[in-house]
Image 1 (cartoon, rainbow, N blue to C red):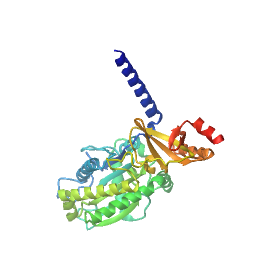
Image 2 (tube, rainbow, N blue to C red):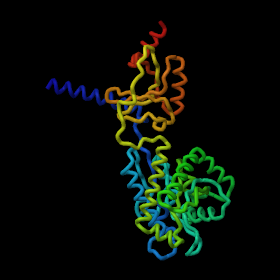
Image 3 (cartoon, helix red, strand yellow):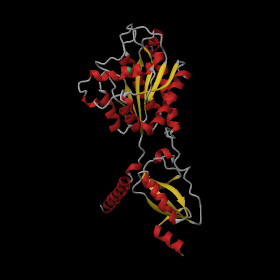
Image 4 (cartoon, rainbow, N blue to C red):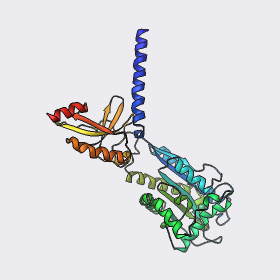
Length: 370
Ligand SMILES: [Zn+2]
């Protein structure tokens, strides 16, 4: 009984210590990279019917490719979480889609559509990937007009009263809100169009810019993909075929994988635990800023630490401690601590090491003073 009580006591203490640690540094736990896939249209909004030779319309092809893409992303990439704006034949409003993306802390938003040329049979074919921006190109304007026109089918159009793609002032405001994400959006859009050409052997009409509602109101990197023209017979056949959908899905997957690599995001499941965190043996006192602790071993890439580099990871009991910077000069820790706090690590603090071993800060300061 005594032993039982003792082990219960130890267990409680362990749990308390652990939860205290994880609470204080909750922000450090490995957040998955969240990708929201948005199959265009749905329900009573069919999207373009294409040539009319198929029962399927834009909404069906967009959904098929979206679901296949989500599945392969989830299967092949660790640390990636896929969410959808719709995963069946329903009609989410444009505002509903962007609100969901912003609420769910999404890291990347990808909207999937098929293109159309006015009239039933067109000569235009090929893929296009859009990022937010302005254009004077008539064809690009038509595409945005068609995709945004869904708004007219919605019951509550009140939420769109400030969305006016024809007003320079309104557009400038939208562009400003998106500015910090635009580089990343363009990067992914280029990867996608490259992949369509190389992997799917399609004609790429390039990366384009225009004012799409779903791009303007998602506060993260976002792209809108037009897989191809359903008003072009051959392309419509291709996009309705299993082979066509598979190739477009594979291209999108490859592009997203490249994009994650570009971000230094770790998509491997077998992370090396101990190999990378050898402390430099040193006789000097060394100071570092502890920014986080987690039960998960994160790669010490800037991407995982809000852009901070020079991160070291040390296993300490059941937790991994993450430290930012390294200096022998205690005065310099102030700047390091400030850097870490400005990135959002508000509870970071200075830790001292002697010969690579953690020692109490007071002891370190005493040693320096002597
Ligand atoms: Zn569409």
